[in-house]
Length: 426
Image 1 (cartoon, one colour):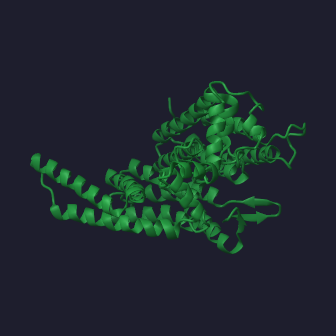
Image 2 (cartoon, helix red, strand yellow; image 1 turned 120 degrees about the horizontal axis):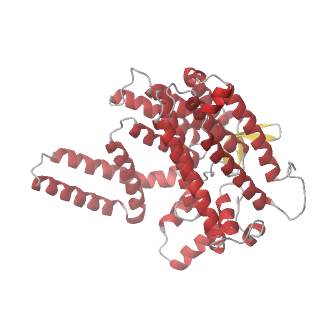
Image 3 (cartoon, helix red, strand yellow; image 1 turned 180 degrees about the horizontal axis):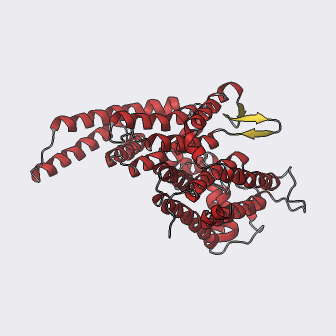
């Protein structure tokens, strides 16, 4: 046991502990009422979160006690159970804030989508590490897409598009394992097409794509490189069809609250006065969050001294908008410290992933880093107004048992795999 503990990456454990502790302090501040009470008060958010932290520590001990090969050997079964848990929500799920994403167990709720990320990472690592899998084969690539897509397809109708969006991060993992960059470019191009269609309409999108493809054809001809006009025309037709489908997706797939958030983010409203009204109503959370962060200045107002935090100006401040508490009470300096801690954690995970001798461990490590990066980037971008509100928690920070436990399981499975690696880093 002592030899195993020596192999455990304690730097990552330290980063995890710091993020959890700082997160708890901010949950305490966001939910503090001014009355002295026990930190174990289960009627408060900080009391409940402390219990979740204790449960997470117990799970860490359990995860590190299990044989490392268990996670690879039973990856398929774990993935299948996660799919069943997501499908079961449509029958046994509890509706909370318009989404059927939780199971009610006694007085507690459990969100299976938080655990499905680790299960999907294990399944993808198992599949891609198989000696018979060829990432350059369209058949195997399609299977990898299916593994990634199935949980997302079960999460979208709950509806919880924010949690489903996270599964796009696995394309970074596929890219590391040999996926052609063209697929990533197609994904970026699709997002740009979606946004520009909402902003300018299909006709302008068609003309813009035709101009770009025309310039691309001219450039290649000048370089005396072969180019197929048929392929360029096919790309133009595909882009136009996708652009035509945007209105249907926007009006029939998205709910009104999602349309409102996109409308606010893309500034689809031309009237400045009405846009400001929308910003203060539909975008009330983000508006108040930006104000709270801006009021923090360089060094912040001090712990428990945030006036907007104390006044409950920011809705859901203890969950998705917890970073606004950091900005108001700790200022730019404190916010920078949190950002640096997350950056160090993600970079450390990438470093650990690259030193793995096992392909399974490497792929799983990249999955963990990608999931944490996606959550961190989108949540912080949402809180400071750079991205639309999509309901993605900040890892280890946001209040919630399912989130904290899910991220803890995700991270410490990899630390177990890393500590069990065959080659030691000297």
